[in-house]
Image (cartoon, rainbow, N blue to C red):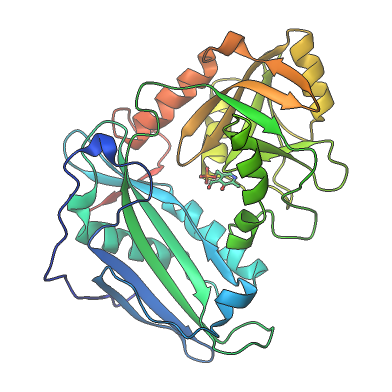
Length: 356
Ligand SMILES: Cc1ncc(COP(=O)(O)O)c(C=O)c1O
């Protein structure tokens, strides 16, 4: 249990008036959580302080060798004004898996969740009120040693910031076009694909930009060895409904184990679907599309919850999906998960953690 010192701001910022213009990650709430680590001493000085910049030496190791990890989660406001989190323990555990791979110290999951809850509680007025809008929560950890030697740092800072963010879909679910990346790769066995480290995203930016220039919303990554099997999308896991059954890449080191992915698999199994967590070749997906068996494709992630895909482009071939419409199962998954998250449906799975 952390002993968190709270220093409230004396200059609260003006809260966004028009929640329809929030966008994503552009403005930040009044406070942030900070905690420091020193080798031999452990984590210390847990505190909530006014949000603001902090000074760092230019030789701080994170600037040079990217020892950095993060998480992404949300706080939701229910119709009766309660504030709640969705499976924060999953984020805490994934954070520690990332920390372990990057040679960084873990944070006890209960401390991680306590810190998130404490900050959201202090900034609870920043959780948006409008339908589909939420408070995006970004916990992260950086190496703060000063010096240019390449080794695990002895000092770290853990921080949490919050950004009120707008509804991902302002006008209903919007099917997207996805470019299947056949040149660049995101992950390979033994590397950091299963972690949420900044370096994974740095290495993916160029491919994402090139795809966007060509009118695609994201890239679909293939495995890094043979460029044959589908893995995940830029910031989402991806699922395929083929002939009534669901296929998604297994989380065996090269794919981020999404909290949304895991929740959706549980729902699908409850609903009687056969879910295959196994490698699927992109060629077989395109073939299924040709044969009219590729019924639905959707991405899954905290930001969009569920994102229907209407088109996959791979090596000049195009697969059109669900006639450009939202699949029935995609819509049902979206309605169910968002229903639980915003408290419109009962939480029969024990996924909701209230911020009291
Ligand atoms: C690369 C990548 N894959 C998958 C996901 C989906 O994970 P989650 O459902 O936990 O948000 C994300 C988003 O965090 C991501 O960045």
